[in-house]
Image (tube, rainbow, N blue to C red; front, side, top):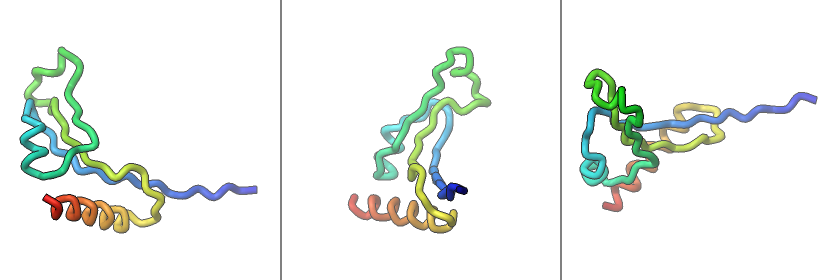
Length: 85
């Protein structure tokens, strides 16, 4: 018996850079991120050619067959949250 595999698609919006204020980013966009990542390796933190801060919003894995459907869901969600502010 063959098991059907449902596709899972995750869409992300990432702002990345060097040592930027993630709170200012959140306030400017009006949405709290799912994740804020900062470089943990001391030897890499100070390399200006490597981003050391990421502000991330993501949909999580959605069971959809079309990337367009996922992106439309993501954009509508983003717009709805922005509209509340």
